[in-house]
Length: 384
Image (tube, rainbow, N blue to C red; front, side):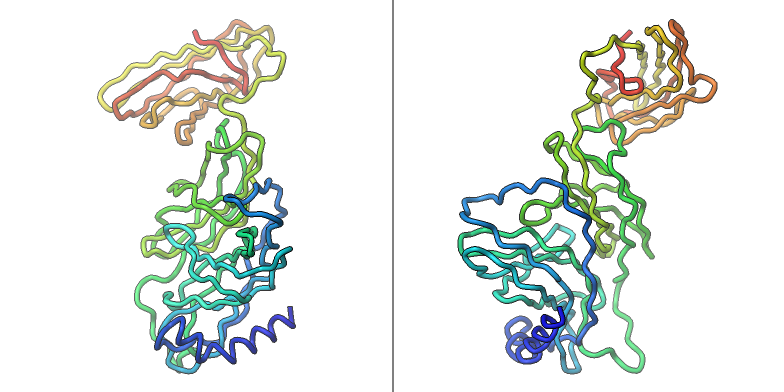
């Protein structure tokens, strides 16, 4: 790494002040030398890596490693925000022909540079705003490497102003990074699903963007306003790697969250063991509607031969407009279209042949169909 730093410094010092400034930024001056920033750490990759798309041949290049911020020296007077990036060279069986640098934007990752060497400058950025990048290597056979680790760094220009810096116009303060990512938190959700702790912002967080890693990069797969996400267009039993960023009304993006590896589960309901035991529960679901709302009474009957000690009823609304607003005789919760009702201390035991009545009020947007199936403690119930 020490050798790489010295080599990169020589490269930038000799070229950045003249050729790179003219080619990349026109008449704009180069940025000031910035401190090295660490790339976002990545946990051990346990998701399967599919083969690259297209029709390449041979081995893919190794992914670029040791990505760090290395803005070049610059004379006073710089006015355009810029980020400089350096990394260690990739290797390949037929030879690496170049690299591609991708920048995270509100619309996803966008290719912003295609250098042939192991360094690049990205310009026309907002001074003091943070930006996130990754790099891939390309070879002569058309192969693309796996993406490098993500790096988030701040756009700089020229030496620090003295004695008092002028405030930058507008809001350039990003939200805090989402934390506490945890897998499989949406009740019995099919595919992959995970949750995180809410980010904060000096003005206010407007939502989140979720990215899934592919063989050659990261693609945006959702933009929830909630602190949870699920994806159904995945292969059951496979693991997929994601990260989350928060965003605010001014277009600032947070640093990426830590990566999470999420296991794609079987479709709802949860798979039953084999051989399938006889149902231990019966559910009677009675509902009545009015304009914009509805009420529901649910009876849970123990049709088995042993007491049910502690229970959680789960089902899925058929219409996305159906929402639970208030419930009784259970702890009710809803995530997207998935609903759960957990027992209270006074009704947690259902003796054989006995029943428990619970219910809730809700809203709808024109349709109020009966859920097609119910589970109790992951066991499928018969419909009464």
